[in-house]
Length: 363
Image 1: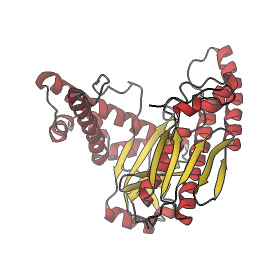
Image 2: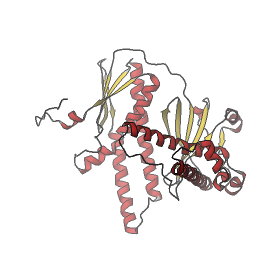
Image 3: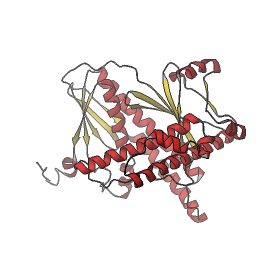
Image 4: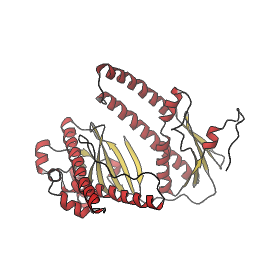
C-alpha cells in the first residue's frame, strides 16, 4: 500500500516494508542508535542554551557529537541528518519564542524534549544522483547504508524501489519505525514535476463532511457527487470489535503494553484509513480539474471532533472518521494544481436545529 503526500516542492510516497526477522532486528537497532544520536545532539544544544541563552549551530554540534559511539556505529550521512533534525527542532523553538514575545503565539513555549530511553527514531538517507542512477543495474534493489561493523553483525537490509518511482528524481529515503519498531515504513522524497494548473473560472465546489456520506459535493455547474463513508465506517467498527476482544484477553493476563496482535490490527486499520483519504482527496481534485473548477469551499468546525455529543456509539464512529487527514491531503493537492481551498467555519450551523427553532448567531 502506498500513500502520496505533497511536501512543499517535493512529493513523498510511503510504502510498507516487508522484511524478514533479521532485517527487522537490524533496522530496529539502527533506529535505536538514531534515537541515541538525537538525544546526544539535543543534550549539547540544550546545555549550550542554558549556559549562553543562544542556539548551538549544527556545525558546532557536529564537532561535539562526531566522537560519540552512536555516531560511529551509524553511517555518517544518517548520523548527520539526525543532528540536522535536532538543529531544525531548536530553530523552531527560537521561532516560537520570538512569536511569543511579539504576541503572535499564546501557548507556553517548551524546549524540545529527549526521546524515550528505549525508543526509536527515523533514519534519513540522502540519495545522491550517481547512486540512484546505479540502481537499474541492481534490479532496483536499494541497500540501506550501514557501517562496516554494523553490517558484519546484522547483515544487509535491501528492498525494491516501486516501479512508479523509477523515473523520478528521488532525493531522500526515510525509514520510519512504527509501533515500537515492530514494523517499518519507507518514505521516498522526490522532486515535484510541474503540473498543469486549472484554468481560472468562476465555478465553485462546496463540500460538506459527514459520516455515512463522507463528503457531499455540490458545484455551481449543477453537477454533484457523494463520497461514500460507509466502508470506512465499517472498517472502524471491525477494528473496534476486534480490539475490544484483544483488550479483554490482555486485561485477564495483566498485560499493559500494546501486543503484537493489536499492533497488526491497528496498522492494518490505519493503512485503510490513509488509503481512503488519499483516494478521496485525489478524486475530488481530479473531478475539479475535469470540470474546470478552481475553487473549493469546505465546511469546517474546529471543535467538531472534540465536542461531539451524539451518544457513546455515534461519538466513537464520528471521532474515528479521518476528517482532518482528508482536509490536509486535499489542501496539499489543491496547492499543487492551483485550486483555491477555502474553509467555511460551521460551528453555528452545526449547533443549530430548525426543528427546535434554534436561531443562527451572527457577528
